[in-house]
Image (cartoon, rainbow, N blue to C red; front, side, top):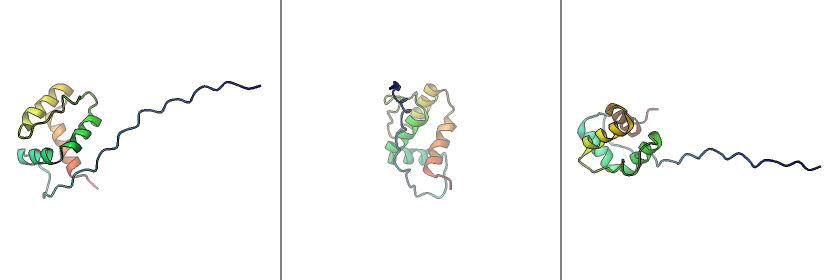
Length: 100
């Protein structure tokens, strides 16, 4: 007698592979405006993917970044995610300068 089998369980949504982290030629990470500005400007596609993965509530409109407007951008992320600005700055610094 043949038994009915249920369809396989769908697998959880596969995480998108992020592009490789940027290699930044600087002596040490800093949350200074210049570091933040240069890092986001030169590596925006990478950081956009990082933000989308870490904070799923963010939409493409929320991640509309304009070079030179980092303060406004981070304030917007704070409002949308209810997370402190320094969390975003640390995320940028740790992705730009991965440990290990």
